[in-house]
Amino acid sequence: MEIIFDLKGLRGAVSGWKNQGNSIALVPTMGNLHLGHLSLIEGAKDQADRTVVSIFVNPIQFGHGEDYELYPSTLEQDLDILRDANVDLVFAPNLDELYPAGIEADTRITVPDISDILCGEFRPGHFSGVATVVMKLLINVQPDYAFFGEKDYQQTLVIRRMVSDLLLPVKVLTLPIIREENGLAMSSRNSYLNESQKQLSSGIYKAIEKAATMLRTGADSFDGIEKSSVDWLEELGFKVEYFSIRRRQDLKLVNDGVDKSLIILVAAWIGDTRLIDNLQVDI
Ligand code: AMP
Image (cartoon, rainbow, N blue to C red; front, side, top):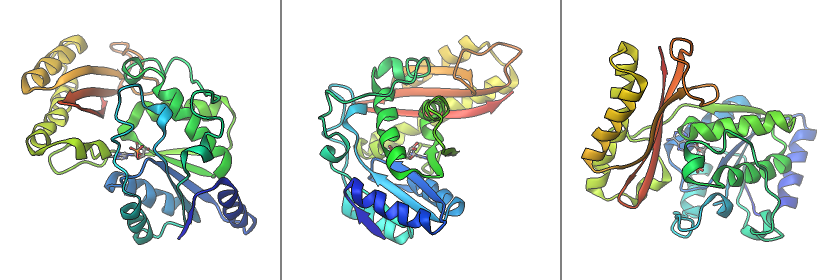
């Protein structure tokens, strides 16, 4: 496995493979790897001849007062995991490599509309930060495929829209959420939770499953389901940012009786930890 920290080395390695006719898959991550990341890596390995995993905690997707400084960094452990997974190349640049002009003055990619709702409403600038760093990675790796997790469903739509609008020659592929036994979606941020918070955290998945059952059976209006879900989570001790039933293709509000492919999305805090989750529902 090659471990590369600079863009020149990255471009050299990838172009060598391309010249040999190999296809390339990219899996962007912020490290602190878990089984959710590994499922993307397995998908990438099945799809392409060579798999590149990037590890970079991207400062510009964190808002002021968010957890950029606290974000778990476990590079040595991650490299062991990636070696065991037979990844071909790990790209782990430092800040200057990706932001030579500094992070304040940097050029930004902004994907309209989809970036401003749900998570975008509560984390202004977040998706612009994500789109910008993913663009930098796509330009420099020039992969045939790029893999993203449906855990960050809104992010997958932001990336798809960017790729489509900017005519990037890459196929975006997404894979389902990998969960803990208690239903909690795996996330690097789960390491912030103490034992009792970990137990409580299963409430998020229970709430979306309950809401999904109500949706399928038509037990209540969309509004009614959203309100009772928020109440239930808040009684458990969560602080809910949003609990929303949306159309799956663009996260717009559901046209009742017309849209059948839906998704339930939630963002909620337990103590100082913000968790997100979602569940796709067909009605
Ligand atoms: P992160 O390191 O959190 O930025 O995540 C890197 C990639 O892994 C993103 O595409 C995430 O959506 C994906 N990912 C994170 N957690 C999970 C999970 N539990 N299941 C599936 N994919 C995930």
